[in-house]
Image (cartoon, rainbow, N blue to C red; front, top):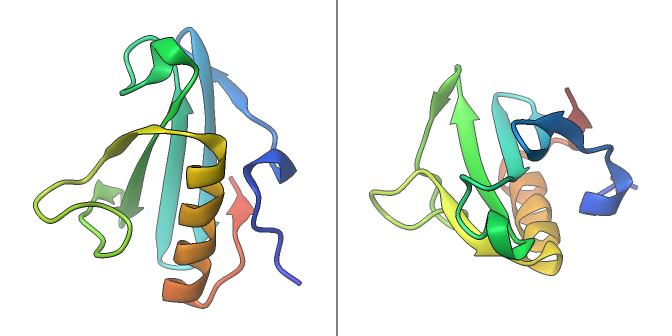
Length: 95
């Protein structure tokens, strides 16, 4: 069974907060919380999907014409991790 919860990964220090980078095969998902991220000052998270090192819009993950999604609770991040798993067919692996 794939591990699909934010708490299952180890946040790494970045700027004045944390980041978790997950690999889903051809895609990666950045999950950050710091003073410059959307919602970071309130203890919330911002996510951005990447493909080939470039931020990309991903239907079902980000809004049309946007590559980041912010002001997310941990439960919302868990839902996005699950969506990435189902969209890519790959279990997340922390990188």
